[in-house]
Image (cartoon, rainbow, N blue to C red; front, side, top):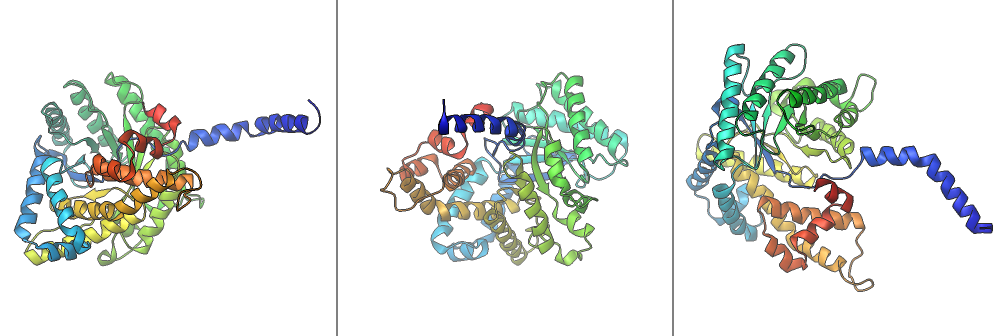
Amino acid sequence: MTGEGQLRAETAQELDWLLAEVDAELASAYPGDRPGRQPVHTCYLPADSFRPDTAAQWGTAALGALADAGLDRDAFAQVMGLPRTLAWPVRERVIAKLASEPVEDLRLDFEDGYGSRPDAAEDADAAAAAARLAAAVAAGQAPAFTGLRRKSLTAATRHRAIGTLDIFLGELAGRGGVPAGLVLTLPKVSHDRQVHAMTLLCERLEAAHGLPAGQLRYEIQVETPQVVLGQDGAAMIARCVQAGNGRLTGLHFGTYDYSAALGIAAQYQSLDHPAADHAKNVLQLAAAGTGVRLSDGSSNVLPVGGRADVLAAWRLHAGLVRRSLERGFYQGWDLHPGQLVSRYAASYGFFLGGLDQACERLRSDAQPAGTASRLEEPATAMALAGFLRRAVDCGAVTEAEVTERTGLTGGQLAELSWPAHLRDADA
């Protein structure tokens, strides 16, 4: 080989050697979005109040609240922030969702929602919560996604947190095993070493209870300024993402703890405060391409009281959910059964409102070269497919509706949503 060909080969070999370490580092740190369904919300409730039929009870309560409100088409559209033409289709699908799968992700809470109780009481509640979750799984009543939030790994609550997890997982292991997809929530994170410690704790718990290595996964709650901006001025949350070492599944924003830590007055603490937006922008940058998912926080204005109070809370919540979706946060927290109405109304309105355009753009992109009316970047085509996949996953639309409009099957949609190496790894 001589001349230009030899130069190209020798230079390519040299650059391969020079960049080999970088190639491996980038492939490991940024594998891409994680395949599989992401729930639209996580519902929190005190662990001692959980019963096997809790999810169904939340659905019944939400349906009752919607019926009691007595909203006609125009009122439903106005309260939920929907075009009038979408009001009835959205309402019909929300009712079906509340009857069939009202809760997508349930978190049994031993932290703020549970409070501080004597060790003996929390030990007993941890065992009882695990037994009830096992019963719900056996009866087919458990939500698709479940998990446990226990106290933080800060010095004051560290031993209590370990004890609760040990009892809870041990009880599950003895009652049919840990449910697939169970996620542990680590609150009040302020340093990446706490994430390292959580990974070590998972390893020890797996060994102690005979669980497969790597089964235990966790999410961290972003509730402190220190985890967004470290003492040295670095983005601590990026270090936390890398410290997760494949076990970290999500970053969940804690609206009120974070806002309070910044000194924001209580009446101004909200998901749409500029300080909250800044933190979430940093989370979005840190998680991009890593496979770690994002969840927005909650609204503490609950749909309770008189009819006017309920409608005002729904209006506020629906607007915040829609705002989060528009900014790429496809998941949030719900704290009350009534919030399921506005959660699904806003989510379904978002997906149904963008359905026709997304389908048309994907259909056009699939046309032979030179015949399409719009040229989409491959990343945009992936985002369009991801939008439609999320719409199907949460029940906003059916796979048949997407196939009819795009000509793509569910499998083809998945192929467009995730690169082949990710689909293979997930399988």
